[in-house]
Image (tube, rainbow, N blue to C red; front, side, top):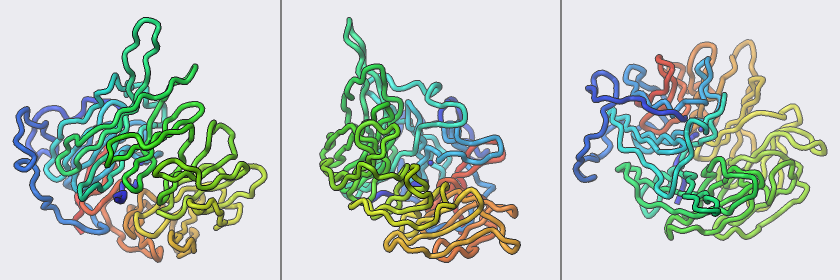
Length: 426
């Protein structure tokens, strides 16, 4: 089982209604009566490019406004990862109350997937000013079938003096048909004077999906997809999943320096450090997690942590005290900071591949996505694609700088201040 790249990272409703021709560039609503999946789901006949270097900017298919709401600023830049995953030519757009599905190859909206275990959160209050907490689903392979896995928080019915419980409903969707395969529902523990505000799938390994619940005090639920049941749950704030290890904070994650690594299969403690010292950890492939900066007793910088043991490797001095890294789904981690520096790390060895500083000869690159050896971004001269293994320009006229990408399509801003899917053409 493996995670398919959904590089990565929104809520309102009512876009793309009405039946229009495909020539118009809009999307048809699904027919009320549909044939069987075998009749309506042809083989993907779009050309695949791994990784894509060019996109057709004249063939964009608009996505629902949830794809960008709260995450795209006035300058048209994504300030946070979009809540969109790609599988084949389909885009899966998560929001608080539904999973919308758009087939970008034939410009069609498929029926939305909604939770059934209770009342879902109101999407109008889940999007805050300047940010959207909803994150992308993940795509996993189970018994040869790709599944899109998305979590929802729902609330049951209150009766008499009994308080209504919140539920976590994890839904698995057949990526080929867009139909629900199954769901796993668990009632969440009541927490005094607090409620669960968001659910995020942090990763998967061995068929177990790890969901972090946003609540004061922290909580994690691991779901076994093959068994279609909860594998374990714990008062634990999951920060990242790497290989078969879940890395995060035991107990209350507020100002807590304690970090642990748990076995993804059963939640058993593999290692722990009560004075770990480093800040937020994020995934960097199957072996490492990464972070920038630390607490007052730790010098800043970019560092890797071996997920299975907690061993820390410093990669940069303290001037690299803030930034972001993105894993390409293969063996490369691409990092950047706010001053234009770029660097690439081999995620098998933890060694540098290359580093670049802005210079008179070469402009800085605002990274938007990385995938399968390609680094996508914007420069003063327009979009560009770099070779992830060397840092050299691989394509200087890609058409777009996608925020989410796979071998068939790139998701990027469109001229109407929305978000569209653009087919890969080279």
